[in-house]
Image: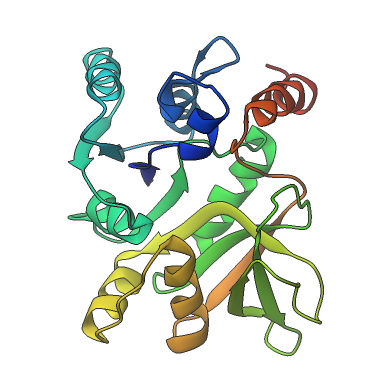
Length: 239
């Protein structure tokens, strides 16, 4: 399986709270969070891990080179952009077939992620599998809408109120493929962000977008989130 990690942002919310380190290098379970994530993905048959990394963060690029020298299948894609979809597009460039994407601060259990990988691998080539969760810890979550008739994701809404069908949000884990990326380009869509990309896939294309419900998955946006993530990983993941 190929993986992509998005690490092109500035981590502005954390820096405003006094965190001096670049977000991907914040310590989580005694190691930089992006390094921990690379090691987790390597346990799930990682052929290649493409990382869209902020080109202005020399410390991050040096660390990724270190991971690569240690034998991890890391491909570094330096990028300067404020558009998270552009980071995804750069990280996915050249990949054939299926891949799984996530941000560098994605928190989940290996048990649930393993099942996600197995389900995604078993699906037809053109099917997208979007990780969702009913655990909401974000002040502005990306709500998903699931059509009860087709059991497919048919729309997304950023912030505000959840859809009437129920409260379920993006888990920040995306089972994508070359077809989905090409469809966006060929249909002349222009996503303004990763969340907009998800909305367009679900609401404006004919691609099947299936949900995968994680019991609990979240990301690290604030300083206190790191402590919550470590408690979760110790308790639920045995780290």
